[in-house]
Image (cartoon, rainbow, N blue to C red; front, top):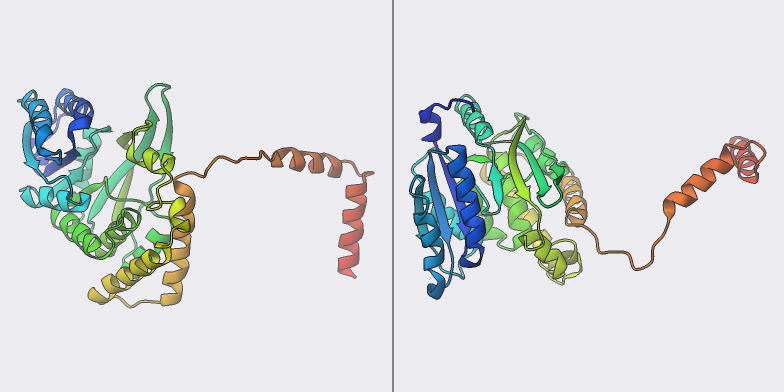
Length: 330
């Protein structure tokens, strides 16, 4: 294992939100951090109801070798509010959100800290993010893109056109609090606060991405995103687009982007902004997956059949296409 400068670990706080019915996942996350030798600060947010308030505290006490501060938050508190309270309680320059069912590669985290220490202009840094199915050992890569443009409006457009969520990236603590606070006040709904806080982050400064495994997200049927799709949530894509609130939420998000630019003295090209917004919405519509087709259509077999016909110079398809093309050229 790579030797780590203790000064590096003292610069970052991990924020782990959890709740009583996920205590086993919280315990697994702490076990991973303990086995990996993490020596930095951890702030856990527990929003369990009062009758279950001991469950997470009991787990935290089992890991006395970790530096854990446990905060109790009201069950009804907005997710962003809880994150803001955790980050505000941290006394480090950097924070990193860590889901209770995910795994962080610490050697990459330490490199990211060192990178940001030498890049005062960057607000955010991350490496390769991965989805894994632990039962089958299958995985997929979550595409992330560096956004290094010097012009903040160009960075915003790059984020809209090739969106990279920075929620689970290494963040400067003040920027994290500021971006989440801005999003919570303007777009508290679950779909658009994610977009807004990441966009505000890249307005604040470049996004650094390195080619090293950084963050591993487990895929399972109880995961929040899977639950949203299974329950056909009208608050998240893809079903959000059918909800009556959709247009108002898009308008609020667009207005918040304009407000963020104006607050930072950034010149806005509304046409370019709107085109970028369409790219983001198109991506978001398919990002959560589409419902299963009720009637299967074998489009590949039709394509293969036509290609086979065109490979035969004597086929009707070949003859007709030649005739059409020649006619169009006359």
